[in-house]
Image (cartoon, rainbow, N blue to C red):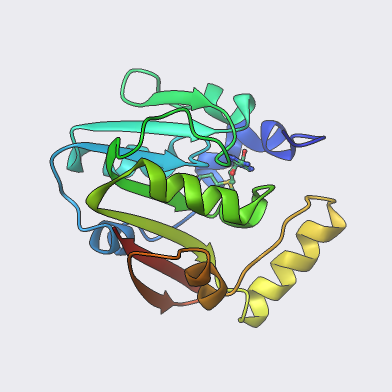
Length: 183
Ligand SMILES: C[S@@+](CC[C@H](N)C(=O)[O-])C[C@H]1O[C@@H](n2cnc3c(N)ncnc32)[C@H](O)[C@@H]1O
């Protein structure tokens, strides 16, 4: 649990100011698919809402109650908790995604292990992260440090190394990286 929840402060406006390419996520996660999708570190459900129609059920898990409060409860099932210890059985989801959240978690390795554990065999996991190798993202990382956000960015190949098994691929575009793992 973070000492200070920066996201609870910005939660009411977050979905209006944040942006990501959901069309790339849709392709990276091989959507649509029948079954359940977990959006880990899913915040206000911004991304989950955009892909809601492409799966049977979406669950948004996040450590910030303030962010989850802004999620549309009728469409998404919010679960409050850290991604380092997910409250789901092994192989519960056809798809697992994490968007712009890996650099905020306390423990990358535990988060990767848990997301892979709850993924069904044959399922796809996608981590979307700002690409720390680019100048613009280095500036964002500096700004987050100044705001005492405790962020820790990993390069795409470092994210890949968090996964011991699975078929792994990296896609990059305009300062964003998608690490795709098929179990
Ligand atoms: C930049 S926001 C991204 C939210 C959402 N994925 C999106 O793209 O709209 C990062 C999110 O990661 C969440 N977060 C930080 N540490 C976490 C952890 N250990 N487990 C789960 N979520 C975490 C924050 O609460 C926040 O909602």
